[in-house]
Image (cartoon, rainbow over all chains, first blue to last red; front, top):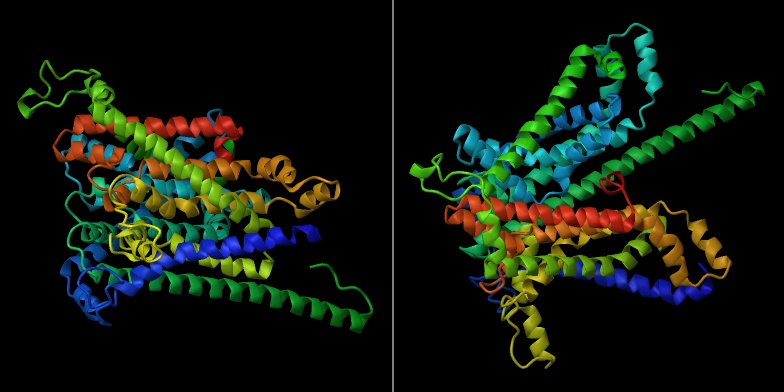
Length: 291
Length: 293
């Protein structure tokens, strides 16, 4: 950056602040309305502070049913999508296949298809093939078709960094393919597996389009929110929004803290090792053997 | 094949290939075959199903094209989604550049967290927030009236304004993140070298930054367009009766029990997104692997 760029940098910094305001002000207004005595979700007119909308929310049995359904589908989607995503990633990386890029396109395509189309096509299959109406496990399969693809992309990225010699060495030393997989490949993939599980659950949890068309008359939390917003509109929805925003913030902060702790641990270990090496050098006058 | 059985064993190989086949056939292909089959058959009463009139035909597609409302709404959905994509791209490009190339490292982490939080908040809730802001007596109208910029409150939910505002807000972060990650891999010294050699800042963008960020730009545009064209919640919450979105038309077909027309409309929406993906890949000369990351 040259000095003449300084006005430009300042401009961009202001722009960023404005953008953050644009992101957070709507959420702020929505949250404040949760504490307004007024019976519609609004900031004006302000009729006084109340917590009654949180009570009203907690007393709605539909909310708890919807939450349970969301968690059920979220867990089921993770249980289906992780094995499928892993199978897809391993097949793509290990199977010598001429049509590999075609297979890749096929597996990634659900990510690029509108969710509503996935929901519609899935319900049509289950209706025609088994005469079933929409329900929670059809919604699970519908969501899994694209959440598996996200999981696969995470696994592919991680597998690219797996040194093939590790597996080769294990096999050469007499390990069975099963032992190699469970002792080497799977532990190496663990960070990607955890990430895929967390992302898959969250994507499932907030999915609307695909779920709406494939779940029939059941409600997930997201569908519950949408129906509240469209019909029985009271600030109880805002109370729910406040809770979800708070959970998101807490989740993000906790994640960040664990990441920083991990980074700090790694840095500390490296520093200790260097210090030990230096001490070794002082004592013996020779450079320590490479580790 | 050898590679695979050697590292995974026969059983492992069979499970991987079997799982992949299940995914492709049961979760992707079969549903699509069924949807296309539905779309090619007429909507019949139950006693006529499987009868002589139940054969493939293009009636549902013809209805979509020749029905003035359907064609008009389809066209509007296309241009409005392109608008949303273009506006979010224009807003996000400078932002992504600033985050990827200028912001000091120690501040970047906090900024990314600030962007991630709204990203993970439910789309329905983010849209609902705009319903409150855009209400007739809401904060935006109040502000504009107080500043005497308008004489009467604007009714955002009439027409398409509310829907477009809501979509831009709902999908904007899907544009920021891909462009940011593409720009972040660009070595700053490339920019500095070009500046040292006397390039103007727009030349730097034109010849260095944009070409480098192309996969991210293409990916952001594709995802944003797909989300906008396939959006159901935003028009449902922020649109009125006169601002129908194509997805709502599909939903209405289902509501009146005409799955066949609904299937044809859904196929049309999917084809639209496919065409857009291919057009972007051609335009930016990027492959699927660059986009899906």
